[in-house]
Length: 101
Image (cartoon, rainbow, N blue to C red):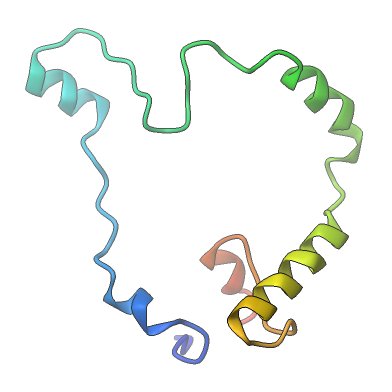
């Protein structure tokens, strides 16, 4: 098992484990509802804003590319703000780090 103590700030270890809320079925049963609209998952009732789908379609041919310079800039800014080296790994999610542990 990987030892994360060298890269995980102590405050993270003090956080409670994430607890999922109730499922849609549980909310329906609890409140006697036939239908509910969930808005807690970054969703809305109206679909994408105008122009969003066009912008996505225009970029689909580049979907395989990673935004290298923005990532480098982000890594340097995080390092400067935290007083660490930009050589430390920065990942989008913890599971991304598991491949380097």
